[in-house]
Length: 235
Image (cartoon, rainbow, N blue to C red; front, top):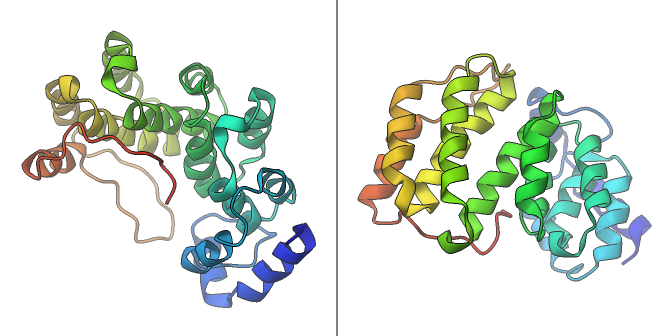
């Protein structure tokens, strides 16, 4: 399948209800409103098509951009391509999931994440925090700079009060990611989560809720899953 074929298939899979939901969650045109489950069926026909992933993202169609993130191998992408993806991520689903998913697979994921976290642009800062979350969730603890990760937990406490809306959400997620995936820092992450308490984020006209980090970490601890690493962040 080539780009035109995939776009035609996405348009066919789109439905008004899903599109309405995405728009309510902050999406903007162009998009078709394709369910993620339907997208994954299409994905099976496209595996290994790195060229197509780049073409899909470049269309600016949100369904195509999300599919591109599922299809792309971030390890094969250049820093320039990742930067381009981050800049073009105009919707939170792309900025906070698609872009971090592929960037966390890159050899320089940590450095890219740290750079983006300092951005004044909300969507790029969000991509940075979530990329670092993916980085700690996928890499063995031995490859992590634990002192740096601990310092970032402290940074969350120091900066979350003045952080932009969606950045707060991603900072809260970072605390959960560290506690869940980095066993030596569980206690530190729980202490950070306790100090954070309930993080207030404006989720607009949706039923979305901001998870309580401490509650989530205690649940993961009870399940005996602390320290479990992931092969991919994509879902």
